[in-house]
Amino acid sequence: MKKEPFVTLEQLKEIDRTYPTPYHLYDEKGIRENVRRLKDAFSWNKGFKEYFAVKATPNPFILNILKEYGCGCDCSSMTELMLSDALGFRENDIMFSSNDTPAEEFQFARKIGATINLDDITHIDFLEECAGIPETICCRYNPGGVFKISNDIMDNPGDAKYGFTTEQLFEGIRILKEKGVKNFGLHAFLASNTVTNDYYPLLAKVLFEVAVNLKQELGVHIGFINLSGGIGIPYRPDQEPNDIYRIAAGVKKVYDEILVPAGMDDVALYTELGRYMLGPYGCLVTKAIHEKHIHKEYVGCDACAVNLMRPAIYGAYHHITVMGKEHEPADHLYDITGSLCENNDKFAVDRMLPKIDVGDYLVIHDTGAHGFAMGYNYNGKLKSAELLLKEDGSVQMIRRAETAKDYFATFDYCDILKDMKWESL
Ligand SMILES: *Cc1c(COP(=O)(O)O)cnc(C)c1O
Image (cartoon, rainbow, N blue to C red):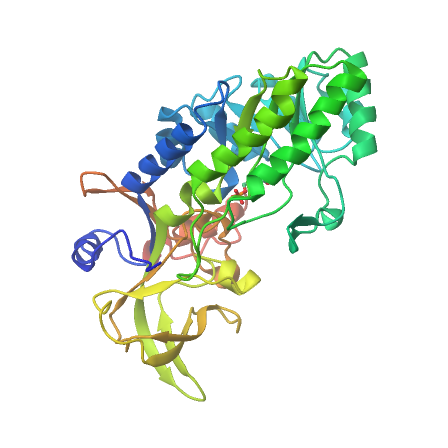
């Protein structure tokens, strides 16, 4: 499928008059249409709820858009809980799917009524001690082994640090029942960025079967099953996008086959999608500022891995459009680089693109999730702004760019930088 930006060159030139590159731009229209489709696809399940994985795009303006559609938040840290609480997400709106969790975070999660998704059997005692056991609790399951679709290995849960083993799950839930838990949830996240309609149905089958066994063996009430994240997006133009309607129909089929005959037709389904909700509806906009001709051809742009880390750390592919040259032949071989003193700071390696001139706008696609959020400050580089392209075509700044003052803010407790020329920053 041809990948096209959701913004035009004319719009970028207009935005440039107010907001300099680089910045992350989000597509309000795309976000809204996508969340409506998700809700519609799962509308057959009465209790269905998406808990957006806050870590993917922790921006309050974005969370508020999703909130309009009844989405909740999936958090895994103190600041994510604080953000969700501050935006008015309340009981049943916050899932706390953390691991290696500090006591204060369990305490705060309980205080704001978040649903705790326990990552480990030893956390039962830990939670009881630091925050008490709630009446509703979720347990994260890790069946181990490898997770396969036909002969394709999708991921390797046996290597993953998360969750209870099967034995621990039965034992843990028995203990939790004794400690007064009345309503249980089950959760598993077994493969990431899956570009296939089969992942959720297969995962659902694993969880539904365990849920039926838990109910039959322990007599517990399973109120919800959380399919978590993992639905992927087509980063590459040759990938076939997932079809959320087919995915939801596949889940319904196993629901009808496994849960309904076991008298569990009231189980609510939850999701914690991040990438699928936002990935395609964000892009990183950067400008070419240098060209360099040595052993290879390089184009240097004004963004760097600090703005988007995925290519540098995973070698991840992000499609790039040279704006205004969409119809020119891709007959130049480039490495597209940032300015970090790190040779892996490249948005693309050996990529065929139209001839790039200094001043050209490059749109780096699919940065709406796990893009800005993974940013860091290596080389003292500052994080960019985040902008929202609204449905009416106007642009709203939803996070300002970091300033040098922000960067140095953690020295504000002392006067070591008293000679800093703040005005020049
Ligand atoms: C990261 C994460 C998600 C979201 O994953 P995506 O790949 O963005 O869908 C959901 N749940 C948990 C517990 C996570 O850690």
